[in-house]
Structure formats: C-alpha cells, structure tokens
Length: 131
Image (cartoon, rainbow, N blue to C red; front, side, top):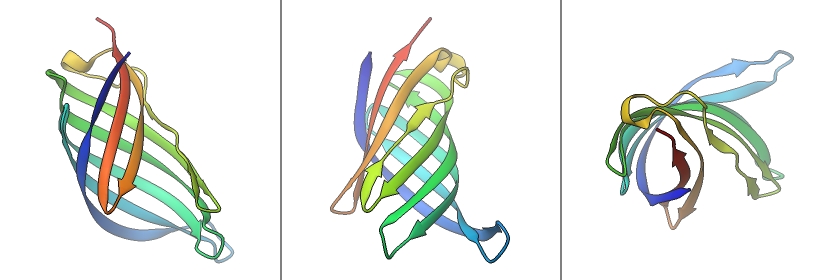
C-alpha cells in the first residue's frame, strides 16, 4: 500500500436543487479541484447533499473524475463519495471506483480522506496499483 498526501484548491459552482417532493430539496454542487503534491491533477466533482444546520447532521454522495499524475503514473480514475456528518462529526467514505483507472493508473484501488484545516484542503490517498 502506498500513500500520497498533499493539498488541493477548490472552486464551488452551485447548481439548481434536486426536488425530492413534498418540499424536500437537496443541494447540487459542481466542484473543480486542482491537486498538488504526489497527486498532480485536476478533477470535476458532481455532488448531491442535504444538511440540517441546526443539528450539524447531513450527508452527501458524489462522483469525481481525476485526471493527472499520481507518483509519476499518468492517467485518470474515478472516486465515489458517500459521507455523513453526525452532529458535527464527519464519517467519510471516499473510494476509488474499481476498474475506473486508465493508462498507467489502470488497476488503481484505494481510499481518500479529506481534511480542512484553517481553510486549507488536505488529501490523503492510500492506494495500491496492480500491473
């Protein structure tokens, strides 16, 4: 197992809310990211989420396509996000979608965690790359 750690910049673009009926809506957001460090890449994320600001609880699902270089391996891969916030405590699940790796990233498997400290976004990607 390998580990890549670094930072990323993020641009948020809100999209029209998703209507679940009976006045229930989920936010839809597109994010464009630029990763720095061992993951030198750009990505596009499409997210659907709900949040109750009063309790600090909610959840989101998202798909993300990353294109660039990971520790010298050029290609692309997809992540699936399925994360929760339980009264302010994050429960992240961000995984490489099996079979989504292309070119030198074919065979990529792994998980990512995201931390935000003083406004800076950090990633940790734990991964394996089979031949």
